[in-house]
Image (cartoon, rainbow, N blue to C red; front, top):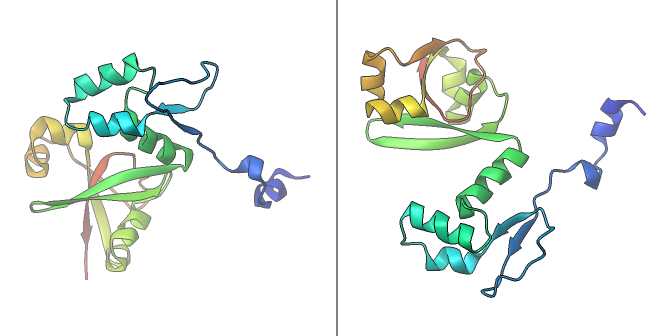
Length: 165
């Protein structure tokens, strides 16, 4: 059977899956299991600890060091989803899109007018935002780049859409 026809069939074996184990406080589990190990009870107990303390306690318990955040990352990865951000004044927002999405389609997710009047996109990497402290500062330092409608959005991009009404 051609690959295209197989992809169109709703087979359970072709659906991405994630196995999550929620351990009791005694921590008993099979060591040969390759799922994502997490304890929701432990996550609740350590919610006010520092990140370093959380990681250390999870490792000591034989759990995944990133906890719930790691589980969310795994889910997004399995679903081929990425996050991009928009910033307007003091407000920032995260948007989920499929990996491989063009910036013009990401613009439409924000608002249809942005796609219809799309001129260009100014892109900043999240890491560069952290270094500079703000979009304007990063722009002044030449860390933003101008992209056209065919740019493929990358996970963690901060996007400013330039458009006409």
